[in-house]
Image 1 (tube, rainbow over the protein chains, first blue to last red):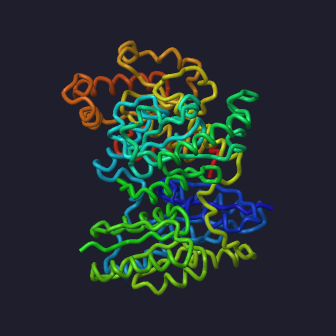
Image 2 (image 1 turned 135 degrees about the horizontal axis):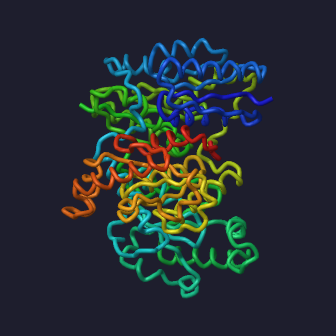
Image 3 (image 1 turned 90 degrees about the vertical axis):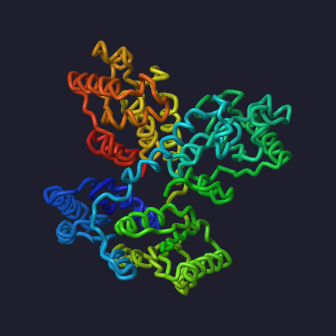
Length: 272
Length: 272
């Protein structure tokens, strides 16, 4: 029987989800049914959330787990009456922080994931737009503005990683493909010559690349295991020759790739 | 004097950051200097982290705040010896969960933000690729596959919101611009006619749009306040006529826009 998990928040629910996800994945043998309840920002919505939680308790025959990031005190008290294990993020952490910092917290709703200051927000949007405009080598003008340029063969994970660097850290990340012609000549694309120090490579295991490309173009030469092997081998050889650091993306998520790159390059993030 | 805040993690640090950010933003009057220490996955790195924390304590003349998502018990114990308020995420939450679930946790490092199962990961990447291929109306083929199509005038926030929907929830989100010709005729772009039920609008306050567009093309007709007013008025009128719901993006972050859309449309997310 799956246990129900509720993420209850007065705003987006993203913090509650991340909190809860990182904990419930520690119980690998168990299955959970997850529900996010965002925008629980008035007593009526709190009552509805509690009704849903109590219904799940009845249906499941076991108490749900509730991760709450509600800030309003009266709604937090209401939530505690639900037939569930309620883990109240705010209650647990805010008291030690208030005591350490010697000042009461503002109890203001929706501070994280809000637009914040205009400058920071603009940096984020500009980084995303830069990334879109410099995806897959479509535009080699403006690469002087790039803070990093990811290179790799088709489907090695360049696009999602660039986008995450832009979205999460406000970094202007371009990406540029290594195509068979470059690989055969063992030469970096000429557009990249001036920016060698900004290059960072992504590689991937040939078997995985074959799998990914086969979804897109089944039974093509492009997707064949032998071609994938050949491209990867040539790309890695080239990156080694030119002293370009690279990561193997096979078992890494977008988040892991992006944070590893940030950490290893020492790039300065523009957002927190 | 700024207080130092450290986010210490054995993996990406993203959970620790999000957790800490949502708490320290509750102390609006205070300023913090933030440091993320990801990949603290062996005792040597733990010692380095502690040294950095202790140094900050000395330099700042006050104890840093440490948000830790370390899972390994011996490293968590080491961290507790630092001259800081250490908020140990794992310690606080895992015990009540183990007791409620009646089973020990796996203490496995790096479960959240990892690649997870191949199917889910592929859905995420496919959604991102779909979004890139259907940005700004570049491609009206394949819109039948879109789960949602965001519409709005240039710079109303369509691209970042679509990308976030894809990245965070695995939703195939396209976006399509409303250009002056459509607005003057008060007609939906013809490519969108078959997909009226998938449309969701973004609007924005004219003053803000003027500000955003001026950064891009200062002193242009495109960016002028009067033109922004005219476009927004026409776009909102059109969306009302066609019964297309829309959000005003002015004071909303990408996260807030995306979660609101998810919540209000009832779209099914493919990722947690």
